[in-house]
Image (cartoon, rainbow, N blue to C red; front, side):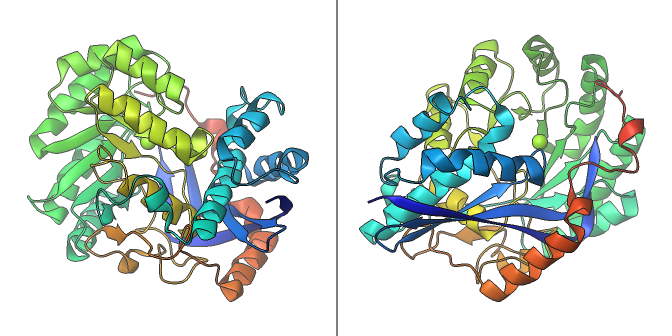
Length: 394
Ligand SMILES: [Mg+2]
C-alpha cells in the first residue's frame, strides 16, 4: 500500500467566548485538516493544531510531502523516524503538529484496513468513555462563577481555569468565584502557564488551597525543574507539568527531578499517538498519571486522542478539550460544543479507524472563514503582543 497524495485544508471555527491565558488571546480554533490518499482507495484523516501558526504548519506539510507520498502508511514507526532523521525535523518542535497529523492519518488508514476502531489497535478499551474538563478562560469573577454553574449544569465534574494573566489577588477572587459557581463537588484545576516566580507560586497556591484544588498546572517556568521541585516540596496541592513536558525526553527529566505529581502528554507536540502511548507507559512506570494537553482541536484530532486515551490505563484525570468554547465542528456527531459531551465524557467512536467523517458542508464553511479571517484567529493577541511581560510575571 502506498500514500499517493496529501490534501490539506485550513479551517477556522469560532469560540463562543475568547480564550484568554497568561500570554495571549484566541477567538477560535484554526486547524489544518489532512486527507492522506492511498493507491487502494482508503483515505486517512488527520488534523494539525496550528502551533505556532497556520503558515508554519502549512509550510511543514509542504516540506513533508516528498517523504510522505510514496511511503507505506502501515509502516508508521518507520515513516515517523524517516521524517525525523532523513527529513531532519527531529530537533524542530514547531514541526510536530504536522508530523503528528500524518501519523494520525496513517493510524486511521490502519484501522480502516483492519476494519477495527483504532482503540483496538492500541490494546482495546480500558475505559469506554474519556473524561474532559470544562475550560474556563480568564474572565471577571462573576463571569467565572457563571461558567462554573454552566459546567455543573452540563454534568462536567472538572473545571479548568486560566490564572496568571493578571495579579494573584485577582486569581484568588476568580478561584473563589469558580468554587461558588461550580459547587463543592466540582474538581477545580488552575493553569498559570509559568507566570509565577517560585516565591509567588508557593504563596498563591497555599492561599488557593482552601478552595480544594485538584491540580495546579505549570505554576513556574517549565525550563527550570529545580524551581518546580522546590514549589512541589512546599505546597500540598499536586502539581501538573505542562510546558516542562512537551516531549518524552522532557517528561523523563521531570520524573527524574521529582518536579510534578501528574504529567501532561500531547501527541501533537511529540510526533504522534505512538509516542503519547510511550509517554504514558514511562509515566506509569514512575507511578504518575497523565493528562492529555491540547493546543485546541476539532473532531478529527479529538477522536484520535479518545482512542489513545481509552486504551491507556493511567490516562485517568480529566483531559483538555475545547467543548466549553467551540461553537461547532467539522465532523458529525463527535466533539464540537459541550452539548455533545455526556457528563463531560466522550464515548470511543465505534467505526473503523478514527471512526469519524468530515462534514463537507461545514468544512467548506469554515475553510471559507479561514480564507477571509484566518489571520485574526492566531495564538497571540495582536493588540497586546508588544506589551506582554517576560517570565516570571508575578
Ligand atoms: Mg497548560
